[in-house]
Amino acid sequence: MKTRAVRLYGKNDLRIEEFELPPIKNDEILARIITNSVCMSDHKAAEQGADHKRIPKDIEVNPIILGHEFCGEIVEVGEKWAQKFSSGDRFSIQPALNYKGSLDAPGYSYHHIGGDATYVVIPQEVMELDCLLKYEGDAFFLGSLAEPVSCIVGTYHAMYHTTGGSYVHDMGIVEGGNLAIIAGVGPMGLGSIDYGIHCDRRPGLMVVTDIDDERLKRAACLYSVEEAAKNGVRLVYLNTRNLADPVAALMELSGGRGYDDVLVMAPVRPLVEQADAILAKDGCLNFFAGPNKTDFSATLNFYNVHYASHHIVGTSGGNTEDMRESLLMMEKGLLNPAAMITHIGGLDAVPQTVIDLPSIPGGKKLMYTHFDLPLTAIADFEKVGQTNPLFAALARIVERYDGLWNLEAEMYLLEHTPKRRS
Image (cartoon, rainbow, N blue to C red; front, top):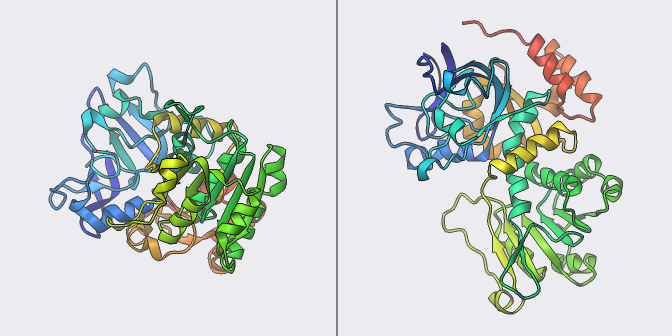
């Protein structure tokens, strides 16, 4: 079986190549990838090349396939797994395998599996660890978003508090408590709002901050104060750009009590220090954003760590159960992370998108791997559609869904996009 894939040979050396996959063994699975969303972790992997902790040292001669947020369907199943999986099954994968203590992961470490490909061979350890997850939903793009959504789920589960002064940790956010999401209207912030409103352990107050009115207005349209109230959450959006004292404003919104849980969604020192300053007694600060700089640091009040039982936690990815929860909530319609997606493209757009990702505005960049499509912002569909009938049709579709990518748009794209010429 031939595949076409984006392979990493060295620092920012990404090449689109067509090559033959080996026949599957009896403990492997052949699969077709439909969608892969680009992650900032892809950019870091490309930027660091063989210096990255998950990437093999010999990629110059044995390149890996990039991409770990993918969804597709099974084509052929090896005999060992024939009782559990079937041709045609839709799937997503938990890439953080931790197989026998190794950091190897699809999208970073393997030669024959990664999301930026048309076909892949799924190795036996993925199934052995129960990390090949069936997906019963209709939209492939939601399956691709299960991995980033699982990071959010894991963040909420990783928060912890003490119980009655004991040393027993009560895991999860404080139900009915105060939650702040700092710099919270980027793609992962939006997902955090969605999950916090619709999960089974919700805060009583959720304050979401940013310094951009347009982004805050968009968030408020997607996740309204009214919708949050229906689920028992008082939701407040706050622009802190021109506030003389953001900490005082946040404390006032909390009734002076502070916040039981604070998520910091951007690796900015003043934001970390702001989050630390608004923690309530026994409060938990989650540094969600992954910094590029290995020496990133901030000043924290260790008096409060000692006397006010402040906790600090960082989460990097969700586990398999978090991903199962993500898939199940999307299948039930409880979560709709479509708001994360701001651009679509094809396999040919992947290399430059990955390299330029920090400078490309917007949220998630969703790639349909069997097509050649330029990276195009959903907001630009109408403009591009003036000369491209495909995007003209897509513009009309997304307009019916408040400007969001959706199942109807995906089905239209899959049916009407011109097939790539070999």
